[in-house]
Length: 336
Image (cartoon, rainbow, N blue to C red):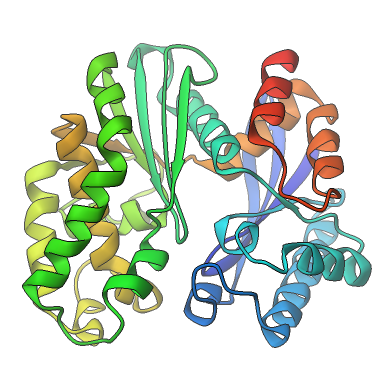
């Protein structure tokens, strides 16, 4: 069976076409289209019409690409930048009417669940009780669990793009009090979630997302060209030092550091502050950098549980308000 998934994120639209061999999604083709929505949309603001049209064009091209590679219409979802927009429904309708693709938004808690599933499958059962952190452009997802799906999930408005808009509005090195103000906000919002992770005492902690992958490279992890099976870890002390390095540089010079790409250089500091603060509060000294995340989680759910759960998400997105995370999480439990 060949299937595909399209992920509309804060910076890019990503396509993965995969074969399901033995229940494992094996990628045969990947592609991406850079939109940089997070640079054009302030948190809580509507997505401009020209950005909507670029999104529609990217999804249409992703669908055509999936068809050329022999996959059916992609499972398409958008993360926080679309989910939080006041014109969310207009964006979803524009994509569906012009491309035929039913683009969905997922509640942050469901994103955390699916990302956990991808990480659990990659890390295996030997990892034991597992804690997960995922920094996106608009939100931070946290999960903990002992089984296939997590026992506990949380989604917090601590995305790297969102916080960059709020605390680091220009491209110059920030003042120390700006960095301290960001840390205070992160500590305040993460306090209860981090306490839960400490109480659970995970055997293994993993981080996912491009933000963490780039920060891991900055902290000394192997480059991507070594392949996904290279073991990559990141130590909290190295991430603390990375915060200092990033804070001392203007945006243009951050892009010259190992691992930091030009499109993500501006939000790299906020991502590093969130990541380090989260690890410190949760009592995590070392984390593994996992190459599987939400896209692989979506593919795994589709392979393992069939199409019914995605059909429910699609129906929920037709409602005038965002999908109810509790109902969708109950659906996940019912189909497990």
